[in-house]
Every structure is written in C-alpha cells, then in structure tokens.
Amino acid sequence: MFRRDSDEGDREPPDFETARERMVDALVESGRIERQATADALRAVPRHEFVPDSRRAAAYRDRPLPIGAGQTISAPHMVGMMCDLLAPEPGDEILEIGTGCGYHAAVTAELVGAEHVYTVEYVDSLAAAAERRLDRLGYGDISVRLGDGRDGWPEHAPYDGAYLTCAARELPDAVLDQLRVGGRLLAPIGTGRQTLVELVRTDEGVERRTHGDVRFVSMQGSQ
Image 1: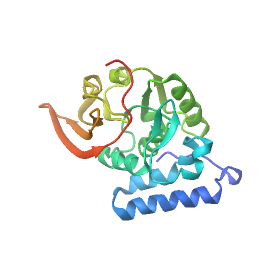
Image 2: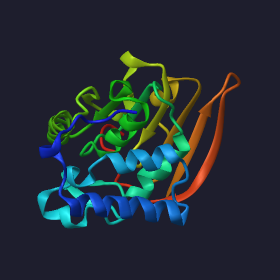
Image 3: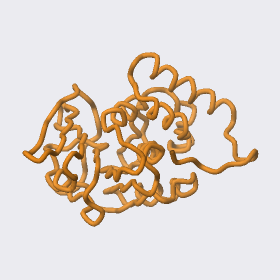
Image 4: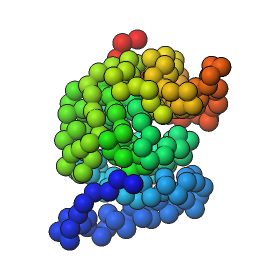
C-alpha cells in the first residue's frame, strides 16, 4: 500500500487525525464501507488537505463540499462505496475521469499504488492545482491529464478498472473500450435523476448492475 514518508514535524494536528479516524469508524460501523483495504485507504488520506481553507472545519463530515469551478469533493461514504465496488488490488491499472481536487485519486493510490492511477480533468485550473497538491502530499506518481474525460486516456490502456466522479448522460464508450476483459467501470449516469452503474467487460460483451440513486455534478466537455 502506498504511504507518504513523514517525520515528527510532518504529522497532522491531532484534531484532524482524530476526526478522520472517527469518520472512518462511523462509515465502517454503519456498513457504508465493508472492505478493510478501503477503510485503511480512507484513514491514510488527509481529506482536509483537499478542500479550501474555509471548508477545513467540515473536511471530515460525511458530505460533499465545493472546491471551486462549480465542482465538489465527493462525500467520503461515496468514495468508499465506489472503492468497495471497484475492489482494486495492488498493481491494478486504474483510470479516473474527473480529477477535481485529487482526493478520490489519492484514495485509489493507497489501494493500487500511485504509479498505477491515471486521472483526466476537464478544467485546467483544477487539473493544475490537483497535480501540485498530489505531488506535495506524496502522490506525485499519479498521472494527471487535462482533457475531455469522454475520450478516456488510450495511451495507458488497457485498464483493470475505471470510474467517473461526475455524471454522464450516457456511458462513455471510449472508457469502456479501454478496459481489459474482466475490467470494471463505475459511472453515475443521468441528468436529473442519476443511477450508479457498474459494468464488467467480458469475452461475450458487458455485464451491467445498478447500485441505486446518486447525485454528482455533471460531466463537462463535448456532448
């Protein structure tokens, strides 16, 4: 599992660390996250570093928060749920569509290794800020690309898994095509009412499951 090197002077203030532990404990106890690896990843990533300074007091509440440019950081339970469903193993190659502030990518890096995470962001200011933030926090091996997420990132395909952190009108075919056989895609689909859709690529085609209603910001880019 990926870990940031630190020394005594780099440790976080106890209030943030305690708040993060309590948040993850509550998610585990409620059954909202089930895999131990997911819980460990959420405990490892300092969510307060990914939100604006004015929102840090709310960083460990289980809710989305605005991060600028009309975008949000997802609620911790949703990040955990998607990690549980994707169930990546160390060394899996993972594609993220919608970098945002970089939090979900960092959690994924804890599961597979930062060098195995590829993330695409449409908004140039968010992509640049996320890349700097990830590098500062020890996740500099995550690859960040500015572009339209509907195109995926073909240069690094095939992927073992992919997920969208934004809602698409319909499933992005290019992203699905970039999965290897057995690869899994998670995507919120819909405009008003959204459904979290899980697709698994098989030799015969695609297996589809749904996981209830969700609420994400809309995917940006060409329609």
